[in-house]
Length: 272
Image 1 (cartoon, helix red, strand yellow):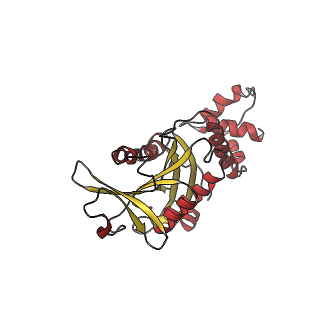
Image 2 (tube, one colour):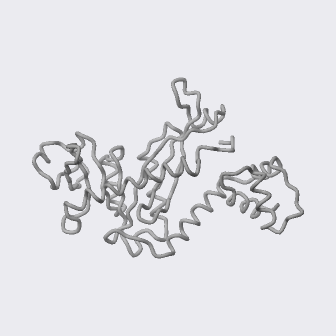
Image 3 (tube, rainbow, N blue to C red):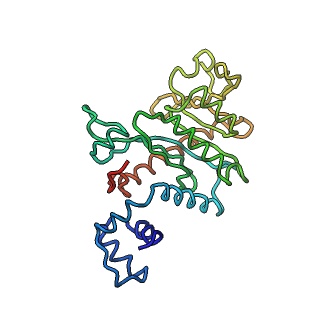
């Protein structure tokens, strides 16, 4: 088997044994007379560098954005979020990625996605040691986004984040990159003296020299949700924010799909 045929078999293998996948793929490759064991195929697969799959992934994303895409008020609406992944219990994986559990004996990794909520496209994905930082991975996503041909082409960019992401540095970074944001802020991130009794106002953001718009929403549970954004009032009215921030839930659904339906954590490899 040559390189492209191995890749073809891997891309066509979905929740089945390797032997069954081979028996189904070989006739499609016009190699009905080729006998290949699961062990031989696995040995061939191990020779392929992981970067090949990353390149294929980014090529598929680029191709997706050559089609017409859905926008929200002229924005490509994205979300970023992280999750923990369980890895095979292998000493080398524990050493590189870190361990989960009380004795840190189970290998685990920190994963992060940049996800296009309206078009169901994972724009970028990262996997890192569990000691990593979600905000740092988000910065890597945004650098990748900036390098794409579709960045700010015929639309503007809008990023939605949960409470783990707001920081003065991250807000400034988004502003410098000309990316709009909507982030849920933790209690205390914005001083109460600026926002008490105000549903929608502008406040200074530390020593960054920037102002951020603060939108306060009272949820049905009575909980107060504080959102910070650089979307101007003239463009996005107060009432739109509850629905807009709710779109972030799409990335949670995507993680559920990746873990439960596609069984992302069901790794067959043991190599870092």
